[in-house]
Length: 455
Ligand SMILES: [Zn+2]
Image 1 (cartoon, rainbow, N blue to C red):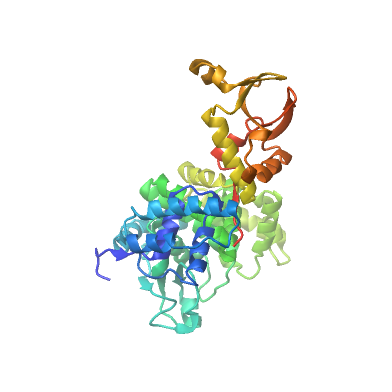
Image 2 (cartoon, rainbow, N blue to C red):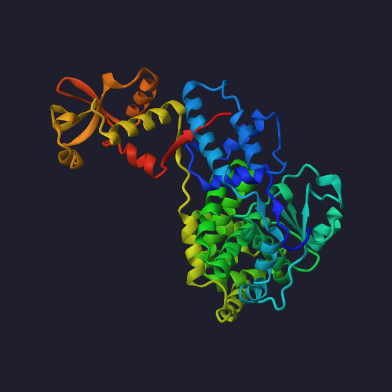
């Protein structure tokens, strides 16, 4: 690919980019892509993204196998997806972005890992792994792969960072190129020459956490953070191996949050020195249980002289107190990513009823009633516009009469009642549903509840 010549996004990359750009009912929204793949009889969506053609493909999808509730939710979500795709830029200057990011890495490699004159490995874009070098890995669906010298010998492919073309997405490329470069920094500054022991929580946790910190330092781009977060929680969560990265992220984040960067530098140094005598699982397990990492150091050493090991570690840590690295701005990254709680996924019937309740109680429909005081209901139409605007308190709010609930959302409404999402009670001899009382409009508004999708 010539420098400065934009590449075309694949359909898959475009759909994932649209998923992280929008707000969808279905959780995780990545299931929408699985639905599209399945509906298009196993289409891997590797072809070039073409706005009109891709939107057409999605619009043709039949939803007849789903129940009425799921169908209604999916129609809404697919329409929202098509709307974003119809306006999406199909081209991306991948090579330009790679160059812009990697040119900023040498001073950061020095600051964080003490590596002088860091040089990124070349980047190769492949249609499949490892096209042109070794077809043994043809069906692998990795996004990006940094082949280090040890892997190069084992897998018989040149040392480089490989990107699968159909997985290249503008929002994630800068972070992922730094992630792959951190694996190179690890090989240069921690791993003994010729060794390769893959400890996912440590290797991937470090690569993910530190790459986000470096990315923030280089770009100050918070918008892409939000997309990366959404990618993790809405798309990657569906792939088992990628879901383990979230575990790695939490563990490594907690390690430096509790013990600090000089502790990490000391750990990296002593781990490199006693590579096969340091058990990182002791550390992971202890941190997960809430122990202070520094208190676990002696136990990570498999040799007999635990006290001598602890003393040596303390000396190394003291030396690293003077090194640079993670500072307050970096720690902000951990805070940004700390707010990542999966929502409660309710059935399509409940979710649809929730949307219906929400619409009724927020639109001040004539049909619905205001509970102005206990045991008294009054129609909304009896209130002047000004009085309606004041409806907010315990005794003045919009409720829904049970008899007004349409048949197609009745069963879902009952379930919401059982879950205290909409509270059922009796006033003046009439059964009512109170969605405000159960906090339902807030649950929908802040994404606490979403719709589950079984494909
Ligand atoms: Zn990695």
